[in-house]
Image (cartoon, rainbow, N blue to C red; front, top):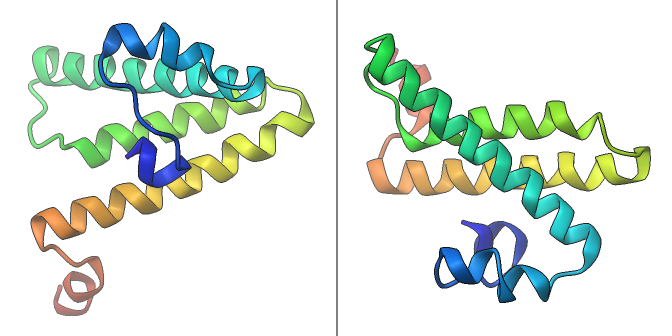
Length: 117
């Protein structure tokens, strides 16, 4: 999804992600990636806790990504004003790509469900 959303070649493994791959990035892009990864890790952790401790069922990857986007949007207001816009634009792009993946993988169409529902 990173590749499709931001046209950034994804890392090949976790060591590469926090090593050579990240070091090749521009300083501002590197900071945005760290915020995004932190938000995604936090979302995975809180979703996992909801499943384990609250017995919440039916969590899917789209819900986790939406939660990550929520945190990125919220945390972006802590950045300087000129750095907020790229984060918010990236969130919108990420949601569009995630929805496309989800709808293609499941065949579920939100428009037809609303019309039939």
